[in-house]
Image (cartoon, rainbow, N blue to C red; front, side, top):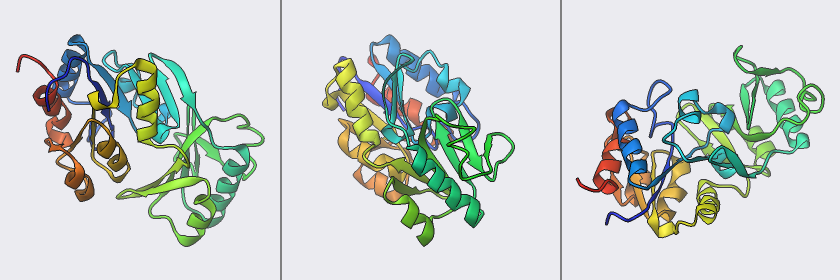
Length: 254
């Protein structure tokens, strides 16, 4: 890729910027800091809700903004410029489903997170009406479900969410939202054209992003479908693949 004057870089988190633990490698951080020094902008583009971001990323000075919840919540310089949340009726319907079938379900929000079959860390969902009573007004932008989604779950969730299967869980992204649409909304705000963008990711929910940015890069640990459509493949998330891609395709003087 030709090194451009000003690039907007969109990074997935899990399996991309972070492997194990809750922070990027120091090498990744150093390259991102250098990219910002050279005038580029760094954004997280993640299926995680904002409240589920590691503190190390939420407060990182080298991050200019976040596309969270698979595009449902967009923050630029700590200011929300767009958000869409799940309705109270849908939250209660999903709560009833998972309480009845006995599987865990996380409700990921802008400021707080909730869980059916609570693990002791999140606010517990114990009644189908919790989002109408004690958690009324919760701003939920994404859900995560245990394992694969069965037929009954799909029947309830499908009208409201796009479902993405991960190795050990499934994600529910609000219908009408996507990482790509989140990128476009961010670019409209900052005035950078789509051709001057880089996207780096590893999973199925990154495929649309990688197809639509100016230069899409797959991690070496990415799913096969993503590698097949990416314009380049970098190292895996455990060997600073993000930092290596930034140094090779973004930084001047290399």
